[in-house]
Image (cartoon, rainbow, N blue to C red; front, side, top):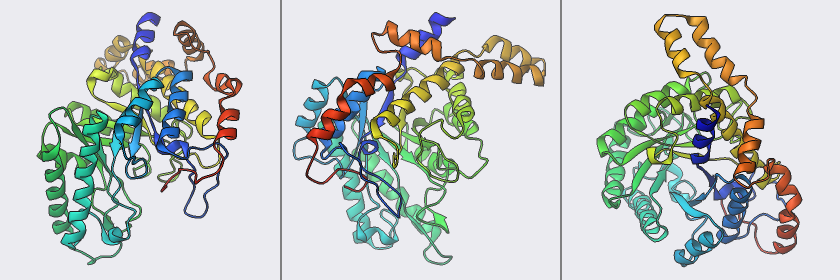
Length: 386
C-alpha cells in the first residue's frame, strides 16, 4: 500500500498564489518584510523557490491587475526558465472606487460594463499565458435592507457570467468562488456554494465552483459540499487556507487539520486527486506576520500530510463497516488513518524525488532569503493591492 500512496502523492499538484509572497496585512496595518517581491517576475521567482524545495508546486496563480505586465510572453518564459508555469488568472473587480455599490451587479450600467470589460481582459491574458482557468470572486452585495433589488442583482450577475463564459476558449474554464459575507454584510450576491452551483449549472460544462475553506459559516460541513460538487462534477478548485473566525487566510491546516484531512478523504474517495480530474488545489493565504516563503512551504507540506493520511484510509474496511451499520467501527477506520504519523513516509518520498526531506530547513540553509533581502531593496514592495 505504501507504494500506491507514494505514487498518488507524486501526482499531487498544489498551485501557489502570487499575492502570498508580497506584503499584506489587516485593514488596520500592513507589516512590511524584507526581501518581498517588487514585481510579478520576482513573485514568480519566489513561487519557483517553493517548488524547488517541495517538488509539488509547479504553477503560480496570477491576480490582475496586481500582476499585470506589458508583455506576458516574457513572464511565461521567465516562469518556464525557473521550472514553473503560470496558472489560474484571478480577476479583481473590488478595488476601484466605481465598485462601491458593486461591480457586475451594480445598478449603474456603466459600472457593469467596466467590470465585464475587466473580466474579458482577463480571458485575453489567459490566451497569452496559456492559463486554463479564470477565477471569479465578487465582493458585490448590500449592507442594508432595501438598498437594491436582490433579484435584479442576480439577473445582472447571470448576464455578466454569460458574457464572460461565451468569451472562453474551447479548453478554458470559469471558476466561480463564493463568500458568506465581507465586505457586504446584509446580503452577498454569491454567498454560498448553492448559489455558485446554480449559476455554473446554468452556464455549462466549463463553469465550476471554487471552495475557499475560509468562506463558510461556523460549523459548516465543508466535506459535504466537496462530496456534493464532486458527485455533480462541478467542483473546479480549492482556495486552501485556515480560519478561526472568518476569512482569516491563515496557513491551511493550522486551525483544524482534521477538517483538511476530511476534505482530502472525499477527494481520494472520488479518485479526484490526479490533475487529470481537473481539481485545482490552490493556496489562498496572506502571511501577515510570518515569513512568506517558509509559510507557503509549510502550507504545501500540510496539504501533503493530510492527503497522505487520506490515502491511508482502509477503504474496504470502511465500506464494510458502513454496510454493516457499524458506526464506531467506521469512525475508527478514519481515525486510525488520521492518527498515523505520515511524516517519515513523506521524508522518504522526498528523498526518492531527490529533494531534501525537510523543505523548510532546506530553504533556510539555501541562502535564498539572504540573497533576495540584499537584492530587493528600493522600490515599492508588491503586496496585496499593489
